[in-house]
Length: 183
Image 1 (cartoon, rainbow, N blue to C red):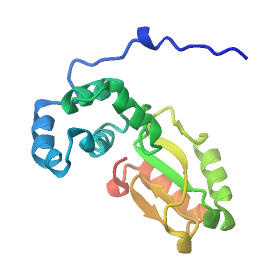
Image 2: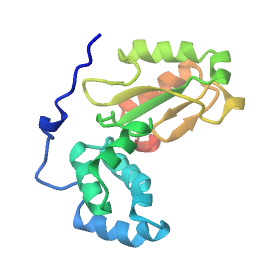
Image 3: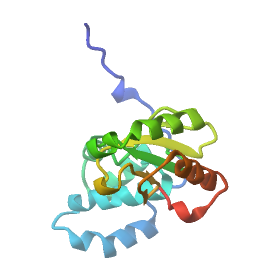
Image 4: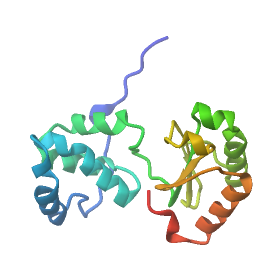
């Protein structure tokens, strides 16, 4: 098998006119985040969390802007974004459904819930619906084994799930219920 090199050096990065890292954000981060860390690099994770929370993904342009702000290499930012599963370079849906697949949830038949969501929304894990409303993820332990099976709907943990409860949560999200937080 031959190795095929990606044309990284010539790859074009989509850019928008408005920066992701605005002067207001830089001032906020300088005041609120940077003082908590011994080095600027230490602030990378919370800054990436903030960008992903706002945009539902971390665009490459934002990575370049963060690198410049923190005075680190763009590669260091990209390495962090691609190392941690919690970050994504692809835009997530308005409602991110993360179904736990730990051993406790497996014993409590999480697969039945996952298969139901897959069929209902016509999605595979790590896919987003065409309308941008839903993204389906499988997740490792969410730390609620005594209430398995569990799932996150955005940042909200839902416990002792049934197919009926999953359907209710999907219907609420489709109706635009804001009670499910933000990715």
